Amino acid sequence: MQQNSYLTIEPQSIIADGNAFAVGKIDLRDKFDNPVIGRSNDIALIGDNSTIQFSKITETANGNYQAHIRGTKAGLSQITATIDSITVTQSLGFLTDNKTVKIHSVKVMAPYTVTANGKDKVIIQAQITDKHNNPVSKGVTVGWISDLGKLAAPLSMTNKQGIAEITLSSTQAGKAKVTAVLNNQQSVNADHIVTFTEGDISASLSTVAIFLTLLSQGQIKRP
Image (cartoon, rainbow, N blue to C red; front, top):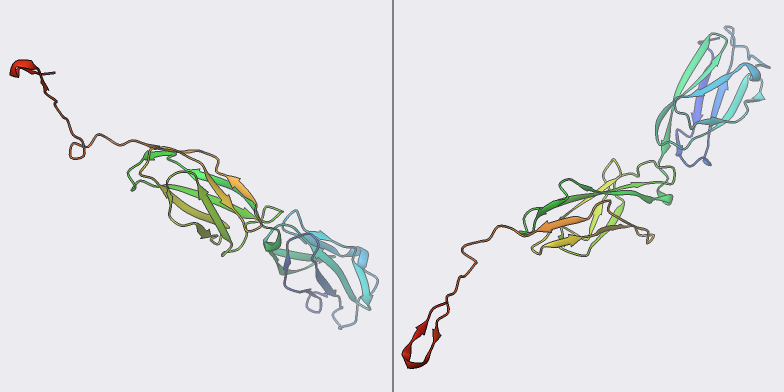
């Protein structure tokens, strides 16, 4: 039955939202190519991630069986059908649900304190996911706001890991709160405040003045 039995999955990729489904079709035939009927209760379907769920396997025609496959974890999964000692496997892709994007976290990458010299920079990263915490695909736009300093840009886009990154610098000492914003108006503050400290005293930019006080009778009082 091994050579004449098949597992097909259509479509080959679905949204990992728990609602979209693919249809797994199993065609069972014996070595003489005759359909193997009445075995729906003997077929086992297994996925390689814990979120994958299967509907009840039904026989749609003589020797043809099918089940619906759903899941909520993005990535490429292997679906395996087993009956007796026969095992067949096919791949199924689960895609991130970009319609439900959210800001999962916003992190300031250490160090959190730098000098306010306009050159030292702090990196801030926003992790963008769908509602099931799957990282979104590349190209989702994230807006940035800071109440102190200068952001490298007001917008940045997610990479393949769903991370959008920006840098912040300042010429003014103080504390900066950085916020990431999505186009659905969701906003999340960074997990740390960024602190910009004063630099060392610059001799070329500092002036020491000595003032003379003129007294009566031409006397000079030195401080």
